[in-house]
Image 1 (cartoon, rainbow, N blue to C red):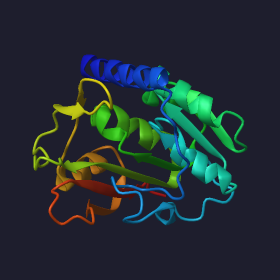
Image 2 (tube, one colour; image 1 turned 90 degrees about the vertical axis):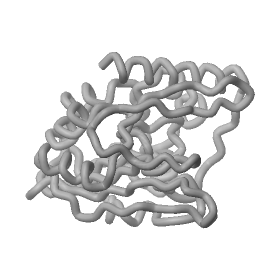
Image 3 (cartoon, rainbow, N blue to C red; image 1 turned 180 degrees about the vertical axis):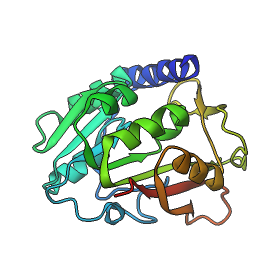
Length: 228
């Protein structure tokens, strides 16, 4: 929890910085699981969301759940960093179908009604997998779907870790000194083992790379489900 708390403090500092700068939050036209807005799969991975109970976990500034809400989908968006949540509220408060929630991800999953679909874009790796994955399993209805992306290889070429331990990563800060966060950057095999350990079934785990073949930056895309 101390590791997660330090990272949460860094994200609060990040949000405070951008609130002071008045950084704009542009709308997005699709979900992007990687780091490239127009490259790779989109929300089609979530399946048919009509009438489903949907959660964006670690939703940040809210641009992805807001996109789904504009398409007529009802989405709960949970963010633990207070200032990131404030940025989301300032930009998207009043968006029909979107409920912005400031809460610890695990605490929300523990007390919420079950969800049909839970997704997270780069958010889950900031939380100890032994804390977040059992909470996700409890919060998913039988047959429910989990889709999330996680850092795999950094832009400097550092690959995933072969043990379940957090490591420091750099959070760039426009117009300021970079911040340090702690992340669980794991191999696809480790992610699959953790899913199975916490009663979730992996349907597919892929590594996504960007259109620039000279860049090593990549992410892991996980698609899993709660056994029916």
